Image (cartoon, rainbow, N blue to C red):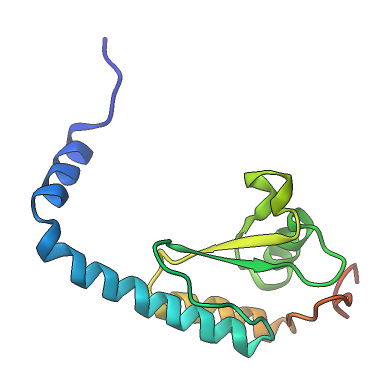
Length: 134
């Protein structure tokens, strides 16, 4: 019996290492496009994210009196949008949530539109009007 990374994944990684020069520029361009779309989308909702380099995530503060777990549940319940609670990475992340840049811009913009349609906006230091309305 054995246990390890599937052969197909190993072959893909080997190809990427051997061809990184031709793969790098289009990959960087894809992630820059996604990052730009997401940053503009969150800015339209009141956040002020700064462009980050060398990562495929945005980290954003949770609004008002939410903790990261409550905020991510709120986003799922109100807008059908899934993000990662910051506290999944330790107690220092409790006031933050993480958004992945894996999806293409149209998918990311759909998530932003769902948030907008649900009335979600970033208002630091205040509770959202839709918070705890159940």
